[in-house]
Each structure stands twice: as structure tokens, then as C-alpha cells.
Amino acid sequence: MIIKKTLNKKFDLVVIGAGSGGLAAAKRAAKHGAKVCIVEGDKIGGTCVIRGCVPKKLMVYAANSRKNILNSKGYGLSHEKLSFDSKVLLKSIKNEVNRLSELHLNALEKLKITTIRGWGRFKNKDHLDIIDLDKKSVLDTISAEKFLISVGGKPIKLNIPGSEFSWSSNEIFELEKLPESILIIGGGYIACEFACIFNNLGIHVTQLLRSNNLLNGFDLDLSSSLKETMTSSGIRLIFNDELLKIEKKKKIL
Image (cartoon, rainbow, N blue to C red; front, side, top):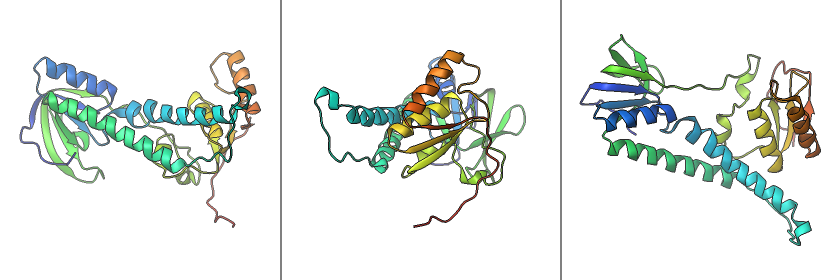
């Protein structure tokens, strides 16, 4: 999408955020005859398409495929010098994310829903300023009878020195290549899922937790079973400890 001034600046409904909720609301309103606009500063599709369900499941499929190949001797199958190129996987994931995002955009165009790439900031109760992607200047101003705020959420990095050197679950999918080893902070279900994915892809995984259990708030039997499975698969779990800072050091060859 190209940032441009919209000729029609008055809408019945302006949706801020083009995730699953925003898309569903915009399409439903348009089908009822409303003049609708969606404002989005990222790809169309939201968390599920861009940095959640879709890319993560593709990683799961790749990880499970490698795991199954390595455990296939009992079925009479053999493999020699199995290799994994993370560049190919990550590129394929990005291509699929872009494809699905374009499908959503095409669906909006068919319903004559205006899409504006930029960030929304309320000027007053009836008007919305469109801010550029760098969040520095106002590109345009639009108005609407109704506004729907559907911006979702985002990961918050640790408030420690050196946190700028870390990745969140968002940046993982933007990498060109996966690392040889990784430290995962936290014991929630997203952290555990990524730990298992990376481990099955052949990456050395260490997981650091402040508590003494995985999946705090879940059933203790489930937590204990997961701990046993992850440990036996080669994931190093460190409990009752906390990361204080991150330092970037030159790689020693």
C-alpha cells in the first residue's frame, strides 16, 4: 500500500487496526452499506497472519518434520547428513505471510473499503490524524460518524540494561537466519512453544525462569509433565533466577 491522501475524507466508520477484529468489523459494516476506512501502520492481517498463528505454525511444521526424520529409524527409514537451512524456512514464512496479507487487502478492495497505511491519532472526537510510519508528521486528517479502536497488543521487552539486543516473539519472524543457540526468558506458553520449536530445529536452547514452574497458573501436573518432556528433549531449564542485563560481545573465532 502506498501512503496517499484520500479523496473522500468523510466515512461512516473508521477502523483503527487491520487485525482479525478490525477486518471482521469493517467487512460486516461495508456489507451493510457503510462507507468504511481502515487505518493500519503494518501489514494487513494482524497478529494471527503476520506474527502469530500462521508463521509460528509453519515453524512448528518444519520442527516436527526434522524431529520425525531423526526418529524414523524404527520405521526402517534412514537418513544421512541431514541439514537444515533456516534462511529457506524464514524466507518461505515471509512469502506466505505476504501472500495472505495481500488476500486480505484484495478482499477489502472488493468491498470498496478504503485502506490507509499510517498510524491513527485522534485530533478530536470526530477527526483522526493519519501519522506517517515514523510517527513524525501528519499525512492527512479524516472524519467519521463512528470509530472502532482495534489495535491489539504487542510484546514488552524487559526493562534491563541491554534489552535492545534482545528479540521479542515479533522480531523472530523478521530474522534472515536463526542462531545456533538461544536464551529464552520466561516460562509462559509462548516461551515454551518457541523453546520446543527451536530445539526440534537443532538449536541449543536454554530457558530462564524467575519462578520454579513452567506455565504458572496452569495445572501443576501439566507443568511437571512439560518440564520432563522438555528436559528429556535437551532443553536446559534454569528456575528461580532472573536476567539482570545483556551485554553484546564480539564473537571469538
